[in-house]
Structures are given as C-alpha cells and as structure tokens.
Image (cartoon, rainbow, N blue to C red; front, side):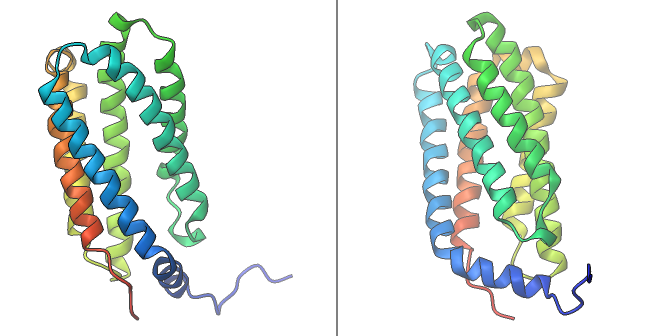
Length: 196
C-alpha cells in the first residue's frame, strides 16, 4: 500500500480548483460585501430597537456563516485546509443557536464577547490563509491581510473593553461591517484566474 504520492502537485490542484470557481466566488464575495456595507449603514441610521433585531439577525448570520465555513473547509484541497476554518464554523453555529434563546439584557454582553472571539478567530484564519497563498506566490494577499488585521484590532476592542464595547456596540458594529464589506469587495475585485 502506498500512502504518499510523490507525483501529487498541491499547487496545481489549488490552481485548477480556483480557476473552476473563481467567477462564481468573485460575484458571491461582491454580493456579500455589499450586504455587509448596507447592514453597517442601516446600523448607523436606525440605532433604536437595534438590539432586538440584532439578536435575531446575528443568530441567523452566525448560523449561515458557520455553515459557509464548514462547507468551505470540506471543499478546499487537503493541503490548504486550515483547522481554524472548521473550528470557526462550529463556533458560529453554536453561537447562532445560543443567541436565539437568550433574553435581551444578556444578549448585549454576550454578543460583545462572541463578536470579540469571532473576530479574533476570523482574523487569525485570514492571516493564515494569506500566508499560505503568499508562500506559494499564487495571488496578491494584501486585501486578505488588511482584513485579517482589521478583524484582530476590532476583536481586541471588544475583548479588552467589554463595557465600553457594549455601550458603543452599534457604532463599532457599523464601522466593522462597512470596513469589512469594502475589504471583501476589494478582495473580490482582485480575484483573477491563476496561471502557473
């Protein structure tokens, strides 16, 4: 039995899968980025009654984002799979289910902590992905790196200043959604077919 295939080309595998999916991925990332920017603008325009709506939107968003990360983990070539992606997906699913049954006064502090942990893991995953792509010289990783650093900075704000973050949750969330949405759109626009 042969366990190691010395003829396997992980870069070629990634390039072929990327080129098959790049167009669909680009449009879905642009759409997701636009939705994030719109959600950030709505958070700034309608702050009253935000927490109740935010509880259900966050629960729904966490569940969808968790499913997305789990599916993305299993669709990636083996060599590029990052366990942080799977952990992030499972934590997002659990967070979404947990947020559905919470009373509103608990949701504010819990949501601050969950957002901090989520942003920290998402930032670490983006930096890890950028490092993998940069190592194999597959694409420009600057938008991914900037988005990862922005996630970690926002995570530090949420985790180190929890009471201030709970008070300013509306503004911080709106700024994060707008900045991350723009970064997502820039990342999507920079996606191209890869050539070796």
